[in-house]
Length: 178
Image (cartoon, rainbow, N blue to C red):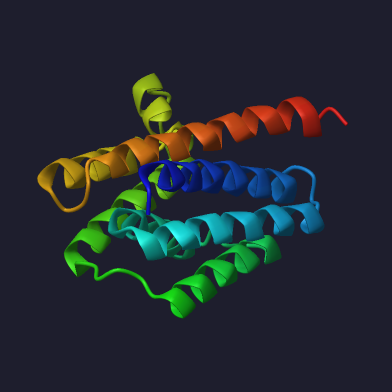
């Protein structure tokens, strides 16, 4: 798969993931949350079946969310189902269990930290660290530069994160003001 298409899939995954979450959490709109969830599942599924680094990222995130009990609504289940169906139909690349576990632990630490750190400390650094989910970024950076997968996957993951943040800004500006 071309670098440009893979970058676009990471961007779309991040954007649609956040938009789906915000429609579900903020507007309680199951229809639009589910539609954007389907788009997220398609984009992340296509990326995962075509690139080993994407597979690590996009498999670790839902597993971590399952473990953190964050898959808590129909749109999340629909997104996960679409992702799994694509992976089952087209197959995923061969993965190292150790690398996948590191990615899962990073994503899980981010989810738990994001939800709890502000409750246990006023430390600005720690709050920002977990607000912007830096554990997974560090894990992906270390794995990419250690050769577990392509270094460009780290850049794609940053694009995913930027799209996620941008989507939240767009949602707040256009959807919450309606």
